[in-house]
Image (cartoon, rainbow, N blue to C red; front, top):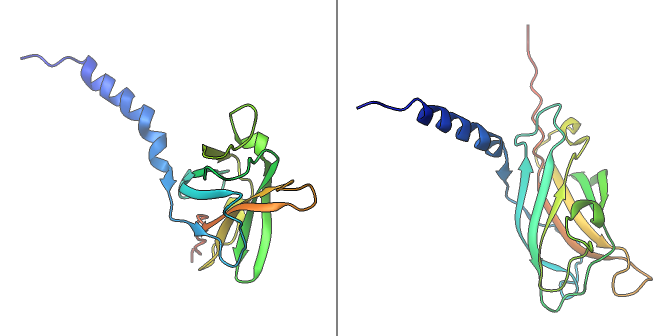
Length: 173
């Protein structure tokens, strides 16, 4: 019984195709604490947060993907800013801001009531250089610039998760 040489080569090529996906990780997250979100008018359920690559290396510019859906009675979100923040104890600092139109593939760039969505925040520069301290968090929020009126922005979503930046280790000689 002869074994074809094409089968092992095909298996190798197939495994190389799926190898990059192995460095992505779905991570545990929670809604932000101590923030007021009017869930009747915004994103109601985040179902998944994924970071690629994971863990974040010292020269990586990771991609954060957030998936979820809105309630059927929510307002349309069409002009929003997505903020990525670093939080440690009582100090919060900005990492990067995105416009909703920069992170969605659909046209028009909006999140409709009752719609599933996916926000892809690519090249989150600076995240890899953050100090990794116990209990440090990354916070991602969506702020609708117009909200239900043009006078005040509304916070539509806020999730936080443990900082995936690498821990720094010292090497002794």
